[in-house]
Image (cartoon, rainbow, N blue to C red; front, top):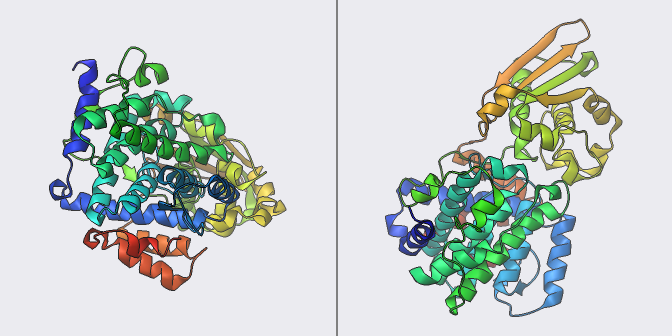
Length: 445
């Protein structure tokens, strides 16, 4: 395949995608992706990064086009999506994709909501655009990973392309305009892992949302970008990875990947803590271990998880969510890892910290070789010399839709009334029947 054909094929896919051609299962899953992201976002609206970015966007002003979630107002659509991108990612409860190593919902959904609200698009248009964004992010992420993820934050980098795809779908751009939107987005794609554990991690998502919308709007007006930005000699893939495989993007338009190895978060922490937490909860389900008897806990897992989460970090919520010693300690003490386990009193609880200091995390070369499958082993040494050990081969992060509805209500009601949360859930699960989103958005202002 010639260099520009890769981008042309992606643009053709976006341009041709329609709700009527989507498989029934994908239509259903897209609604739950919308519901799941919105629950994470409603949980995140009162976080400090969210309040800062909401205040910033409102202070800049501009046309009141799209709703800032629980921000008591509207902003220009790109700015609203920027704010909502931050809001939806900050609580670390948004979905992800194992092979792409990214959070597709945190990019596609805020962009889709902003454009659909601004232009009065239908619920079917909304779901179609979400699928377009997911497919582009997942497939491009699979092209460049896992090596890309050593430095880059895929949600931000590949997310810019996905945001452009989502926006192009809702703007109803033609194929040439969509091609240009992707080309423009490619030079705006950014996001580094050095941001992890800080407010700037969620900024990567917001920036990708804003960049994708701006790329599509510019392309709509005739602004041009490179046709080979994805695989050109000085393009995105060559610039951000030394190992790549273009086949996932070459196959765009075939079997949708939205539900293929895409996962929903079940813990309020970094996805790279999931496998060790699964192993710990497996042990806890099988036997009762008095905390006073624990001498040491040794975790072995894949390299990326070690690099990102091995240290004990409790200086703030963002850092603690990237700390396996902290997450495992609260799992043992409180029997769960929800947003409640990252409040300031828990972060500084001497009981939590004392247990966390007994936990070490090292690399398992076998687990590293299997990544992006997420294998982990937990070995607990107790004071009678006995050891308790278990291994999980992959994350248990695919709850049934009923569990996702419960998760939404649990997260949403941290900031809105339960009756309103239930109404929002009902509307989203019937969103394909909406001619426009005004009925839904009135509950989110």
